Structure formats: C-alpha cells, structure tokens
Length: 165
Image 1: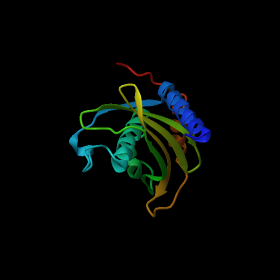
Image 2: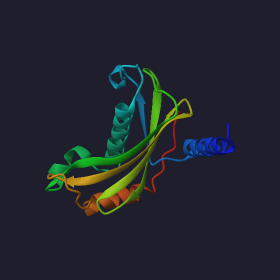
Image 3: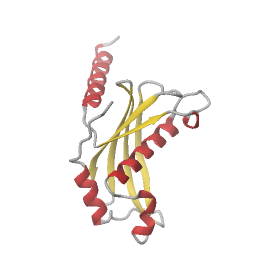
C-alpha cells in the first residue's frame, strides 16, 4: 500500500473517531425494520437519507419547529427541501440493528442550513452524512428562513445531548 493511501486511511479513521466522540445536538434512536431494507437486505442510500430525514424532523420538533406544518404556519412556504448531500457508508446496516442517528446543525444561512449526521451502531460509526437543506416557496424557489425559525435553529446549535443507555 502506498504512503498516500495509508495516510488517507489514517486521516479517515481519526475523523471517524472524532465523530464518535462528538456531542450531538440531537439523538434519534431507531431499530431497523424490514421497511428500511433494500433488495440486498441492508439499508442503502435512499433509506440512509430517510433515516436522516426522520432524525432532522425529530430534532425540529424537539426545538419547536413543526416541519410538516410549515406551509400552514408561514404563508407561501412549503416544507424544506434537501438540495445537496454527501453520504459515506462505512459499514452495512441490517434488519434488527439498533442505531442512533446523531444530528448537529453546522450552520444556518439566509435560506439554507447545513446538517451533519452520523449513524452509530454498537459504538461503531456506520454512516456519515452531510446535507444542505433549503426552505422553499410553493413555486420551488429558495426563500428566506422565517426569523423565528432561524432563531430556533441558531439557538439549537448550542444544545448538546448526551447519549443514554
């Protein structure tokens, strides 16, 4: 193995260890059921993002934002839309696995916010997810995040949740 490859592997392992010990803003627990499996009997791209979406919705509810009701609460706004994402699969996730989806808001902009998520099973990092999400108008155009929602997102970045057994 070349020195460059071993250096890259070492950097990746250090990053993974840091994520494992990082304190998230929210923890969403889920036992993987059959409904989250693909034809190879493991969680794939679409279902990893679905787990991430469930965790973000859970986090939003915890801080007082009802994502499902955005259009009713804020005139002309539809639910948020994931625009860009990155997933790194490190280990497969199977039916019956109990996972924790740790979520942290990285930054909050004028019309978007960045979320970092990492999925852990048995104290092992299995998936690393980064997402940029936009608040959209009903016409599918980015719009400003309403002030009260933006303030809740910014305040939540200081929130830390410790895992409980």
